Length: 398
Image 1 (cartoon, rainbow, N blue to C red):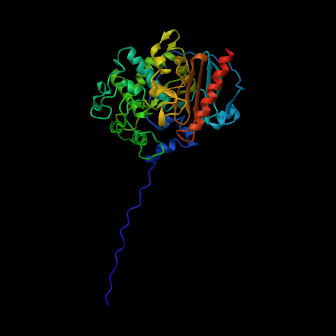
Image 2: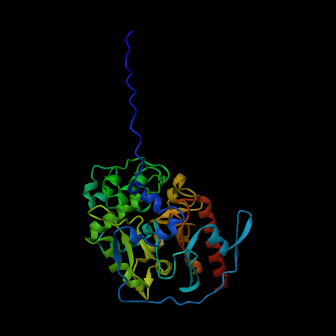
Image 3: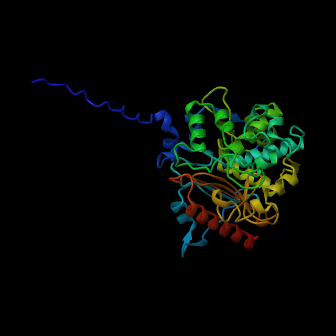
């Protein structure tokens, strides 16, 4: 009788669990840790300072109790409930340039705490682009990306103009999905934080629509704007922001951009600006005052007006499609809430960052938050409802 020895079946090696290095973006953004990380990004990533310069212009304080309520989901809610329901960490309200309300519900937040602003940074980049156009460092919004970044020749951005980047109608890149592991935005995040080639991630983005025909919210478009600005000016984003913008505001503190881990390190003009809530309010006041600080025109008046809305049907309120909410339009890297030049508009960042500006009411509101998720349509709608109610309250009180 003979016997045969059966060889065991070959098993595939177990899948390698993602390392901390691969998952650090998820960990930084997870509650409750994000209340700490969003106020300590300079402890977690390399940074470049944006010095505030020698001018300090204190914001007058004129406290006014916000004992109003806003209507949402069939109920009336107080501002204290807004903070609890939407995980507010910092909240500053200006009326006619005065601080009328200020609160810091976040465990690690205070008047001197620099907050991680995420995509509010995109609106800051837009301000800087407007300044660069006015001084001639950038020739025209209809210049092509490749006029300043020839390394993008042959990519989907080859024919893209600066104007198309500003309105996020480049037609390049997929729908931003933070919960899809291999989406473009997740590859971008992993390259930024894990030491990868960020430029290559953006260069590899596919074209999905003809330029200028469709809005698609795009961190890649905004990041490329920052790179165009650096190439045009010969200065880093932080250095240009400090010299042309921050030192004129009378800010309380230096701001900073955190940078990619890989060399050459680069600022994330699409999402790495950090500043105190009061200093962010100063940015809002600058835009509410048509680009003027202490009688000096810092941002061109026409550029400010472009940021409040336009007549482009592709970016009108309610027309943004799957990558925008129905109550928003888009213009010049800002989210618009109407069509008239004096309607409210806002900068937005994931996890609930807002710089809300209502020029006709002379109101600026900064809300920093630590949402459990990057995007949340219900919390966003509740927040905008409450901010509009506050602005209306002060408009009636003037």
